Image (cartoon, rainbow, N blue to C red; front, side, top):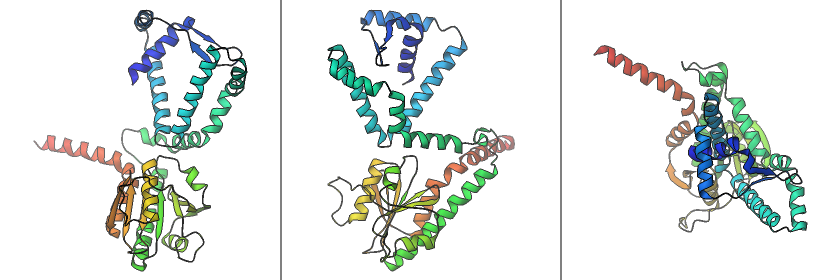
Length: 325
């Protein structure tokens, strides 16, 4: 991917004379060049790299573009991005065809392009800023030391796993249906908005009350974000996979459907059999025990906090073996 970014960069930075801006619209287009001219310009621009700042500039642009693609790739924002690209292509076409009315209409939208993008991608932008804010300086140290924030987050995750495991075990014994969604990288704001906001500290008792058969929110899904119950009674999209077993009910189909569209982990407790299932990446694991569920949740929500420690443990272990020899 970086080679394409380098080409784009050198074309823009070294030969801005082949670009022009639409003063009336604020959108730029590149004038057509022959293939030979393009390759000649690219070669000259690459040879013009004469400082470390150029390399750092390219790496920064590559990182920004890669981060943006990674941010929207696994969310519904990718559909919005495709629609925006399509509108841009249509705008270019109507401008080249000198369709005045259509050009004016599109120019009204693209003249406030930055504001439009902020409004459309506000959930993704907020999620990105929150991710940056959660990344403390200690995450980049080379000694693997944890600060109090990391330790507290780890404790909250373990507490969440224990509460969910206990609640699922109780509901499984009593054959109480449940549907719980654990948010990961993909933003589930649209799903949360379909339910009732809760924003409460998670506990086995709270989960039991939410999914109590006579409770008003027991039919929907509970969304868990950052070890807290963000909302309950949420509506999930059903899977469109025709190969799903006919034995599965609405809860299981909804769990598979959401896991196909996002990277969320979805836990289901069957109301008929009491069986515990987990949907992830479009796959459904059925008949899990409470111990299996706990181990799976720990792997998904606590391993990242221990990765640095494990890396240094392996390094020190290898060094010790080398010294023993």
